[in-house]
Image (cartoon, rainbow, N blue to C red; front, side, top):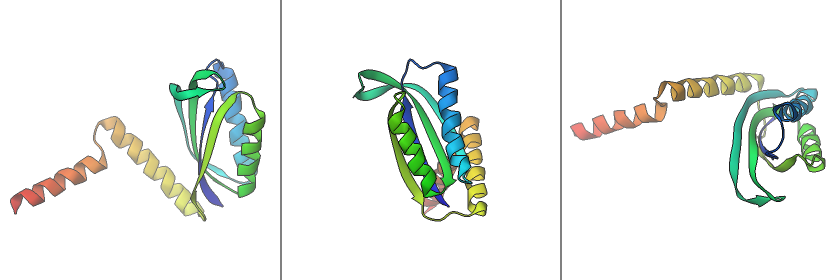
Length: 137
């Protein structure tokens, strides 16, 4: 299996039910090849940098997953056919990923979300620790 990240932009006039249907269909394609969804993040309605298919806004969806390359081909084929999808982009993050690495990625994402919600991030703590040690010298 390989690890991928796909971001896709849906038309802004779609209802919540239609958006959920597209997300469910996308997830079903990934899972049908024995894949795993690591992260599904709905960014919501955002302004586009430039008009796409005469639309100035779009609903952004980010999906981080591990699956076989055949699933990605099918996913992108469906995106090309579906008029509700304005734009999509898939990036391969890793050539080979094991079940242990998938679980570790899920844990890492959960801890980052928890740190972000609590108001402190790990980067801030490391930066402060470096500042303290360099100021003592």
